[in-house]
Image (tube, rainbow, N blue to C red; front, side, top):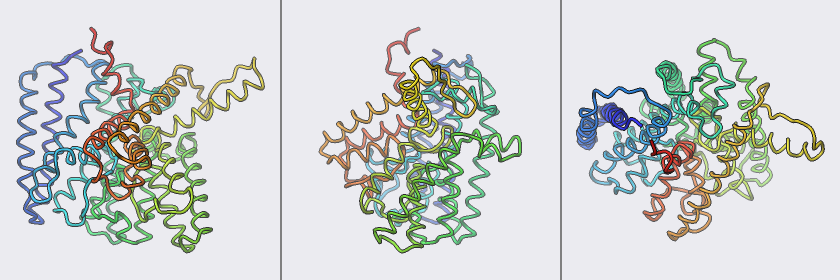
Amino acid sequence: MSLRVILRILGLLLMLFSLTLLPPILISLWFRDGVWDAFAIGVVITVTTGLVLFLPNRNEHKELRIRDGFLIASMFWTVLALFGSLPLMLFGEGSLTITDAVFESFSGLTTTGATVITGIDFLPESILYYRQQLQWLGGMGIVVLAVAILPTLGVGGMALYRTEIPGPLKDSKLTPRITETAKALWYIYATLTITCMLAYMAAGMSWFDALGHSFSTVAIGGFSTYDASIGYFDSATIELICVGFMLISAFSFSLHFIAWREKRLTHYFQDPEARFLMLFLLGLTVITVVSLWLTNTYDTVRGLRHGLFQVVSVATTAGFGVADFSAWPGALPFLLFMAAFVGGCSGSTGGGMKVIRILLIVKQGMREVMRLIHPNAVIAVKIGKVSVPDGIAQAVWGFFSVYVLLFFLMLVGVMATGVDQVTAWSTVGSALNNLGPALGDASSHYGNLPALAKWILVVAMLLGRLEIFTVLVLFTPAFWRR
């Protein structure tokens, strides 16, 4: 393992990350909110640490291997999220404790969208902008990781990309082609963000709100500049725009990559994972809207608006709100919350277990039923026209098993801190799925949870964002052996 090369890369990443603290300084000076110095101090600390890591190792240029990729992927989010918490601890009156600042920073960079802050409307504009920017940067990092890097590492069934998608990398080690793929993804991501911002402005948002919400919409993050989230605007047009871009961002960026390269859209409807997601959301929307109508929760129009929006927002793990769905009647809160376990497509900015894994699990279950009827039959599991190798199928089941086990362990851990069962399972599920909203005592914010519970949820966010195995492999003795 090339530890000195990894330190050099981390140093570079920190110095690059320090540049992202400059726009909030400009926002602070523009609005004269008086907290620019918090970001300036963050820049100094981050740059200094980056130089300390980079300078002694600046001449190290060994080729990176798969093992290095696991460590870099995990360190990328951990280190940047820790340094990203600095401005949140330093902006003066109303600044956060270390625990809350780290929680908020991890929630932003992992695009979870869970918040410990109350009175978001009254935060300084630069802090509001910074929270949104964290999600946007995290979303782009997720896309590059999921489309360009994780397939090369073969993490949790993501290697299916190498057999199916012509756009991303197919090599078995990290190569300069990642740079080419990442560059194209940046163009796509930035174009979606700008288009989303212009659409929001055309619908009546100010430039500041449009910019901030476009950041979190395309990243499927869920942070807002208002406590009431998207519901603050009470605009059907804004809600439809948000739904549209949440759907786009929930599709695999590999599909966007093909659309950008080949100038065609038909593959969106031909892709089994995208079709499954659309049908899943359609069915869930029908159930939700009809239930809201039958229980007289809303009138016809508002029931359709709120039902559609909350289904797409929760199921794609964006976490925006136009209504408190935790107060909806019957099983609807539980049903919507469980939909977040499905999440977005692999290679999207969405969280959850990913649609492709759920689709594979369903198909494998159907195969086992058929084997009961025809014990001697050889039945292949196919995604579209592609036969899924048994190794990938086993990896998906392995991922699911570890996912459930970790969920159980962290649920017990959070309950041990004194949190009630409903709040505990919903916060752990929300963090692990990078959703944001929760039920119980955390339905409005996470600020009242015990400090230890928040640290457990930080770990859950990181595990969920990095597909679990990317982090767990670091804790095996074999990883560190030469």
